[in-house]
Length: 353
Image (cartoon, rainbow, N blue to C red; front, side, top):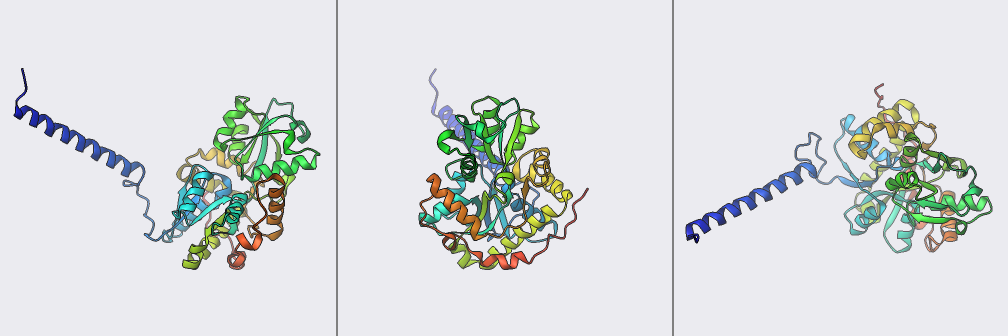
């Protein structure tokens, strides 16, 4: 039996209602999951400075500055934005959506070589990188890496430079190994599956292999390149000209957070407990491990950008073809924010036991 006009109209109305209900559901889910509609956390100011970071220990001072500012009753003057990788951070910075970010030092230099208005204003950390092999591997010395497959985070990762530097010190070169690029979160699984012979990246991914029982540290960056720098805090020059006071406040906060982290082991435990679930979406146990085993595995003091450090990065970058050598320290570093930061003391926040 054919349907009459009333039945067709009713079905049309039902379809429209279902479509409207589905759209409303999608909107609500987006608001809850992505926009924090049900979150009890205070909202940042409309003009809050957006600062990009990754869930790695090299960027830990970013979430630490954020939660300490909250604990001390400060207003939400900056907003930390979690990214999944440096390519996404780079694109957000280039688009102008991200005025400040933690980023790989060689990547910042390379962007400046390309004419991007980027300035390094402070460091994110020192050390905090390891080269790891399987626990049952027969590799016990750098020389035994010859002919092996080693994973690094990417073309502009300082891990490629520290590998080059250490191989060169042992009479080898990058041509003597097979270097592959792999996202750091994927490295532990690749090592476990024996898809690669060694992995190197920032923490906590190297520590994860130790905690899971199959990884062994061949060397720490702190032992082969003391004071090693991987990531820096970089800002768009236009933002410096527009809101210099806010950038100074950010640098000061990062400086005080670094001193706070290095002042007492209890502070590191507190940072792991706070940053792990909320900012990193990681088990605090992993952050606790890499922030304490050993205690100087990664450090957060002495974060002033030094010319000698970056000139070495430039030299190694040229040797590896990572950099063109057309940008130098004064081109990509703004040291004017560090005199005030260097005079600061750690945050006056006692960590709970």
